[in-house]
Length: 169
Image (cartoon, rainbow, N blue to C red):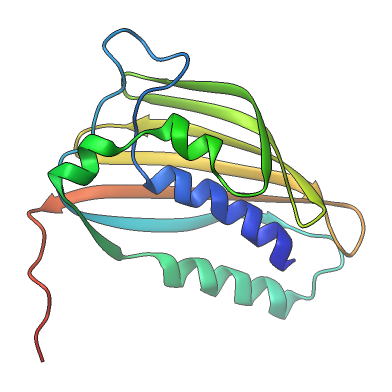
């Protein structure tokens, strides 16, 4: 299960990494996020794995809930350097993307990733705007327990203002 979650995490990282140029981007390019503080919420929409004990599924749900509310500061320099095409290219493991459409405020990406001997199909669909990103990530593959597994996560990132000053103790 950890292998599956690692590959699923690739999608999550790509989704929160912002947007940049893509092979299929429109001439105007994708919308860039605004520099500042961003809060990301993660919702586990669907999680099916045959043979998985209910307590393990509950633990997975709690892990996803724990990832919600994460604050992250993006400087103007970081925003200027964001490039989703590059992120897709170095997304860890071996990924072959059958669709990489990132244009305007839309993202529609699909492919197959192999990591640690496990292969999953991944799709990311959603919107990315200057002040809000909302992406649904679907991963499907073979469960270590046998049968097919599927996980659907919704990640919503919202610009909350200027970067917060680091806490002092």
